[in-house]
Image (tube, rainbow, N blue to C red; front, side, top):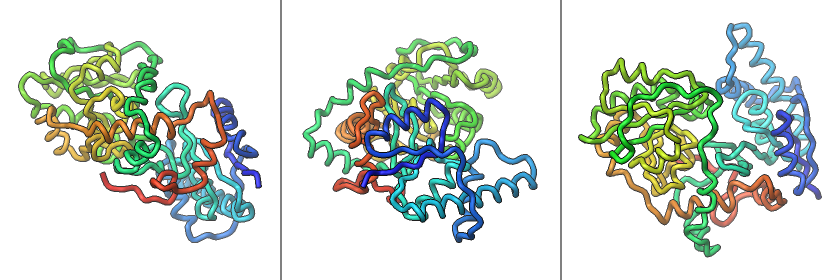
Length: 378
């Protein structure tokens, strides 16, 4: 029986990407609005509350909040009934972390249907297609063993991921670059801190103890006092963000923290001794440049052997006190990066049914594509 994909209609370009990837594997149907229903499901209240809590735009009044929750519950009921009537349909959404898209995907899961979540990958011509979610919510295992086993099974070239690394470049800024401090040469030992866009869902949902850029920068300014003599911290603001770091540095009076908005992001990555981020895509990309990376939020790639987790202000202070003590396991990281390159992030330019059918087939022998797997502690 051919697979039927039911997609909540995204914007035009994203719709084209989804169509491109899904069409070789089955019939694709886009719906413009989520169905609504009046049935009462035990999970409806919790699903609606979660969808609203992670929404980018929050209701401004109690009345608006109650109305939005009511609508989300009715959408959950309608979607749940729809997928119960169509048990073989695969629910598909772009991102699916909040609002209507989240209740649609939760309803499909609760009805027992399979799901696929789409998101652009942080690499040119690549896309994320995952049966469980995107970013930290994805289905990838949180330990090195499955990746090492997969590499051994396929006799994978340990350096195969180098070709993907060669495609990584700095994103073009959308606005004029903000002011930069007088920076020391890149030859001096330093920790590079690439910042994210304020309000980024990665921070709001998966930022852990650092859900705002301002809080993260404040923590860095305090922790930098513990850096060894001769080291400095080099911060780069996201080009889409309103600048504030220079004023924060001046106010804190910390002389070993530098703002460098002008030097190319990956030139700084290549010359840095350590990369420190909440959960920026630059952190993931930095793995490809064979650098020690520390993640302070929730990241699917921050597990033992691949990267280091620093979840509290004290953890960050400890890292900056001994920045050269942060290491990684080359074998584990190579196997992980090869899996991302050769399997996890398929090419938009080369759509194939296997890239989709493998994901909805369920858990394989090494534990990949398990949509029900619980996230592991890092």
